[in-house]
Length: 273
Image 1: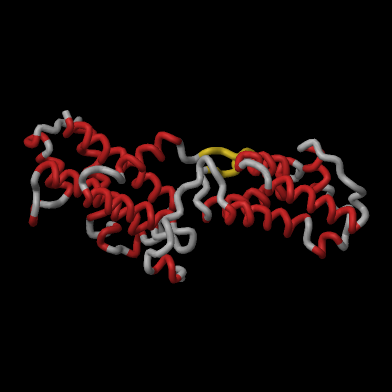
Image 2: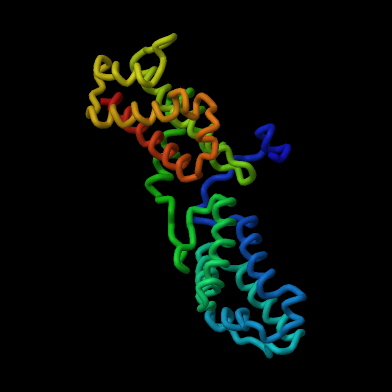
C-alpha cells in the first residue's frame, strides 16, 4: 500500500539517481552489508570472513585485530565513518570491491541480486552486472525527460510528469499507468499541433494529420508510434485495463517514458521551424 504522502501527492517525486545517492539508498545498501558481515550473530563467529578488513585495506586504511570482537567493531565503525563522508561514486566503488571479495559464483550472484533489488526500488540509475556497477540511464535520456516536462503545452507536461511519478514510486510503482500517461503525452502534442478534438482526438488519427499541419515525419516513424499506440489501445491493451498484460515490467515503462518524451521534443522542434 502507498504511504499517505504518496496517496495524496504530498511527497516530492523521487527522481532517478544518476549523479548522486540519497540517504535512503545508501542506508539500504549499508544494511545489506551489515546483515551479511557485521550483525551480532556474525561477530559471534569471528573469522568467517574478513570483508570489513579487506575493504579498509582497499581504501588505504589500517585495521585492528579482526579476531577480537571489540577490535572488529572498531573496524566496522571506521569503515562506516569513511563511507558516510564519501561521495556517491565511492559508495559504488565500495560495492564493487565488496562483491569482488567473494570468488564463489553463488555468493556473488546472491549479493548482486540483493543489491540490484535495492537499486531498482530506489530508482538508482545503475545496476550491478557481473560485479560491475553499470549505468542504465544516460544523461541524454534525463535531459530529454526534463525538457519534455517543461514545454509551453501544459497538457503534455502534466501527462509526462504523471508518467514519471507513477514510474518513480519507491513503493508500489505503477508501470501500467505510467505507460498510459507517456503515450497520452504524445497524443496530446499531436492533437494540439493538428487542432484535433472531440472524437478525432486520438493519436492514431492525429498522426495522420501532422502533414496537413506542416509537420513531416518519416512514414516509418509514424508507423512506429501508431504501433506503440496500438499496443496500449487495442482490446487487449494497457489503456483498456487488460489483465493479459497487467504485469508490465519496469523496463517497458522506462522505454515508453524515454521514447515518448523524445518524440514530444522532436515534434516541438519541428513545430518551431
